[in-house]
Length: 182
Image (cartoon, rainbow, N blue to C red; front, side, top):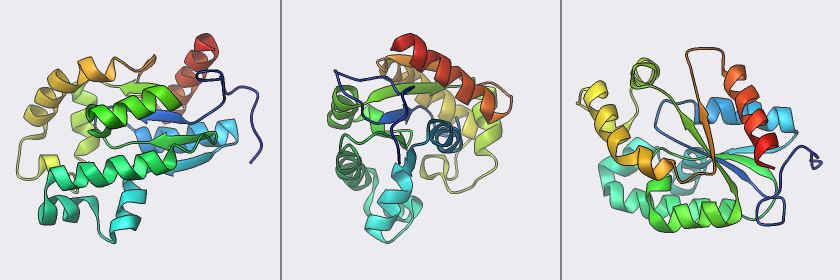
């Protein structure tokens, strides 16, 4: 794919744009659309983890636990961070891991895609494959996770609020922020 002149440089060079944020915020959907807008490849880290493991994220959690999953996630994200311009959507917990976060902040442009709890609850209710929500109240889990994670997500240099609107609105906001950040 051709490089797009609209892609800002990170640490003096062009590299990946990495979307971080809570589950349900729309990182994958927005990431696909952002990549299309920029003429870049899109990679969903969770899909890459599933390919590497030969099983779903939920199965990995069930069979081996979260620590095992996070280790595999870190290795997959490190592989994806090859310096080539692309858009990468990470899982909600990826940026919480110090080594993964440091890699993203050093080698990419991190974008925190944020949303209010009500929006997240609505969106996660559309899928039943989220391991951290298994047999738990989504609102309670998301509220607890947001309290822990949002201060860490805030380390991303770009912060975009997702609202109850078409995903193109979030893409437009990211494009504006990327231009302003550059």
